[in-house]
Image (cartoon, rainbow, N blue to C red; front, top):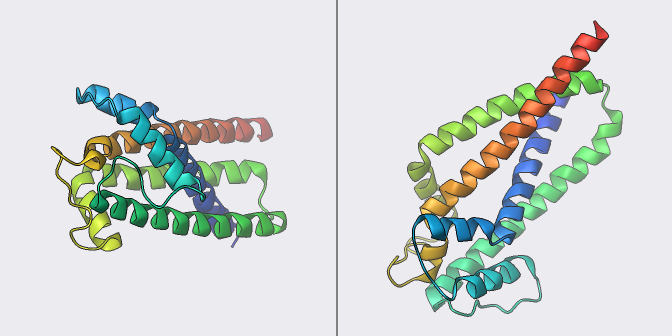
Length: 199
């Protein structure tokens, strides 16, 4: 039972870290700028539209439409914002539950570090497999969570696919994976150090 509690706690923390990283990345223009640079895309409106997207996704007082996007793009962004809102609610509930249950946990810090690092390695392996089959996962993700046809755009005319192409999400996934790997490696070496000190 102790191991199960530690694993559940580790999974919640792992995905909390992942969600925080994704939120930071989408709120920052850095990755979009890098994506545009790698694909040699020049768009004088990029900075302004990116700022409008960030405000739209994370500011509840933002208008219902993003300037520079056509009606289909705005409709899709409305669905994206709704999805992010649901994810935020779920993460808030899980994290609140974790804070309520954490004082009752009986596992030691040393044991938790070991369980967290091993759980994170397994989850990183799962994310790696998703990355290998990213195109299939990306298509399935949209089929399951969005209305048919609402996420199909023309890369020659639609700003949304130029700013947020599959290549952008691949780049974001790699960035998140590498940061989570660094966190996992840190906790793994801390658990090894704690084990050596206690032996």
